[in-house]
Length: 506
Image (cartoon, rainbow, N blue to C red):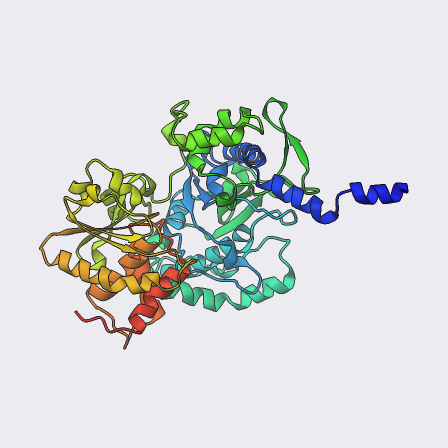
């Protein structure tokens, strides 16, 4: 047999090599070390921009949570989707207003947002390159008009209307296409019913983005230059490092060699085996010192609680979880100050402006609280996870099964009649408290709360006069006290379709 024939049989095919690299990318060992490497860069940017400033700090859900937190700086969560910035899909989302982000950054005279990208080509995810700049521009224009109406505008306020300010790598034709949609972005923001007067009153200079990466992006920036700028800076930090080729090796803790994966925290369901960002930060040392052979076992023990917390992190360094106390409303903050995080069993009581009585939102974790029966007079659970009957026997309780919208496009819509009827029976008792829960506290429970506001609020809607703006306005009202609410578009569509095709009587 010739040498060429032998090599042909022994040498792996391109397909086999690609599959091998894909499998390597999905291994927790490489993901954990890649995240730790990128988190160190994020911590350095925190030292650079947050240590001596009043800037607010946010990690973009969900991947950003893995890179921020565990250090000396406290990060809250925000939710800007890359799909809202994808080519030909540019959107000012009416369901992801990030109201508290705007308020916190205006009050702090700046902010920092952390995210990452899986792309080996792009330096920044589209969420940072386009979604956030579009959001900034829509807010700037709305605030400028609010200032004019209040007689508080500068003599020359043209700077508030000059955006969107996009990074230099966005092509000119895409810039022009985005600018052409500015009226639509403004209309989308207006449709939510959010009165930006409160924001306009504290936003002294228009928002504008600056970008920071491991390359030359943002190398010239300093706290001094940003403080003197004629805009309120939003510092957008990408944790991902440039990748020269897939499978590129780096050296980690204890000399461990690992294949660097950009945006390693993304798509955590495919590799984390139940490990969460908080668990990663708490057990970072154990994870990074584990061998490639042992790390899956270490993760299993952490998830099962067989490895105790090695140390108590400084509370100031913890990532503020999804559902943390809102910052955009003084009344809302006071009402929910001591409730804790949604993921830890905290509750978010709806604003009185919703007009449906004492209703709150929580995740499945609320059923593990020892004082659960004191929190509400009735519990409505909408989700797949089954509640232990013994935990809900002392209160009025209803479980309405509903799968995620990715699995079923109609489960939630079919569940709404029972939900509305249960809520009406509950509120027949004066002063009764209802808690609406779902598996995560940010999707189905929020959509149900929106439906209750539409059906039972001061001005109930029917299929005769309901439009999508009504759904957006009710979501904005719910989000006022639950700023991390993020129902999927499919969930809200089911709410809209339910009212569109059925008559809901008082």
